[in-house]
Image 1 (cartoon, rainbow, N blue to C red):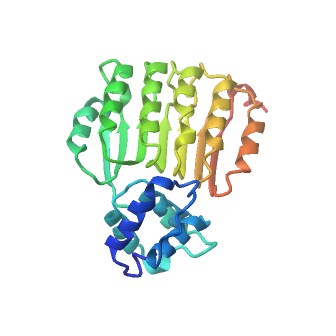
Image 2: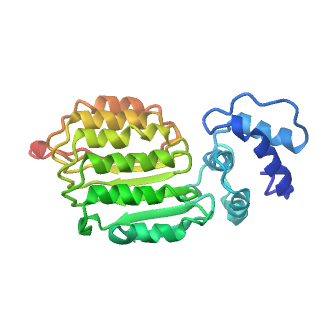
Image 3: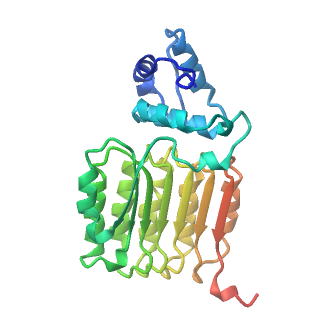
Amino acid sequence: VKLMEGEDIDTIAQVYDDVNPILSHEDFGVIPNNHNGVEDDVIRLMKSKIANDEISKIIAYIMKGVDLTFVKEALLSIPKDQTIQSGQQQQQVLQQPLVPTEKFTFKASSAREEISKIASSKVPASIEITDWQDYNADVNEGCKTIMDSLSHLHSLIHFTLDFTDNSKLNEEGCNHIGQVVNHFSSTITNLHLNFTYCSKITDAGVDSITRRLSSLSILVLLHLDFSHCQLLTDRSVERIIKGVEGLSGLTQLSLLLVNYNLTDRPIIGLTQILQNLTRLKQLSLGWCSTRYHHL
């Protein structure tokens, strides 16, 4: 708000540098009372935790160390008629990155080399890694190598992995994926993970990923697809539900779990947590199992 009103960027930068160590997106904590002028306004805004996804996410980015210059550019790029007023949300704005990002799509076979080329950039990255079924080396060892290379990035905002039809990914690979998700838990806003027809993923593999979900403090979009992973049981669904439970900032949620090994028992738990996701605007569920197709 102050940036859009023309307030000096260095003044605001000094304020958030001073208070950053004791602030977080979910709990802005106890703020010292020795600030004045613009500092008071900034602190008041932070403490208010206003119910406005756009402003809340911008604050979260600042608190997590994203260069304030990028935030200013993003704010100034939003047309005045698209700014979100109190109590109103415009989906078009919510779906856009709040800060400038560099978007990349890599094939798994060349991802490590390509990621190393952008590691020095301080611009937040949006990365999609595809074609894992064509990865000639050990896919689980490849996960480790590629996820390790991702950890050298300055910031990861949007993260997409598409393992469709991969018959080799197992718990080991899932664990490496979970680690990199946890590494960027304070910057990821959009997470897409597709494991359709990954025949070797077990409940333990799902657990390796989903137990890190609750740490994604500013996540607004989550897409998980474990359809036709035939080794999964209701335990995996329960772990997914537990991981999603604390993601209060979600505006879009997609859970695709088409699998004849699953029952409808976990749905009760899912309906309970959905009541707590008060910012949710879009919900997509895939739960049909072949054993019930005749109904």
